[in-house]
Image 1 (cartoon, one colour):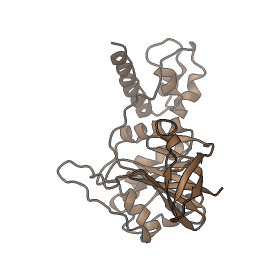
Image 2 (cartoon, rainbow, N blue to C red):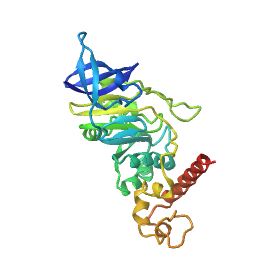
Image 3 (cartoon, rainbow, N blue to C red):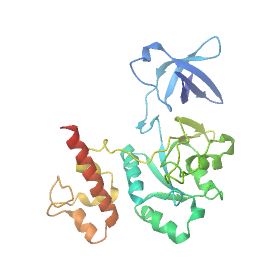
Image 4 (cartoon, rainbow, N blue to C red):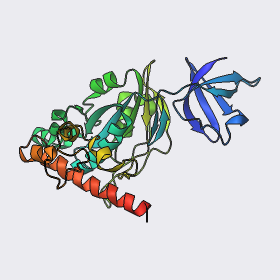
Length: 293
């Protein structure tokens, strides 16, 4: 029985990629109300007389990213912009929580480098390189960073995520103009981008690589994080210090013997990262309180 990868889902049908050809398939009735088929899934399918297909079995998944739902992902590219729209570090760190929770390789891409000087670029993005993240500077307008992006996404499945208006679709078009994805302009009135991507789809970059462009969004709820311990593990710089706290359940707020607060005082942890941790912790605990009212 042939195998294929789901590259898009359209109106109850699934387009399957099998080598150099695509087959439009429907799901066998047994899947209704049972297991869901996601973009990125590897499936077994049977062929129909009209050249279509019927999905018979979902093959075991390596992983499943839930925001958005994509199966068998290898890495996440978080796309931000230096300007137009400006991406504050608080928003960057919010996206990083999602990426860290996935356990996938995370690469930070800062687009629209043509709008910011070298000093501005390093001020915003440099600290993330210091934290151990791979950082790429790009400009879709100037074709900057094209080779770095191509090398990064050359194999496996890469998900692009980030706020609206930062140029995700423009960067994909830069990598491969044949996609001709619809790009949007940033709304001057609201200061952020309009959504231009409407569905999840695997876009072939090379013979071995796929990109997943996702609908942009400017806010992520933190309902997937379980308390202070769950939050601190998503801050690698804080998690490394938390192991030395006096109390196992330390929230890193006012507890005595807190190694995290001591590290902040000694500037071994960026103060603004700790401030963001406190903001997110308050949000998480408020969500938890509302849940059990």
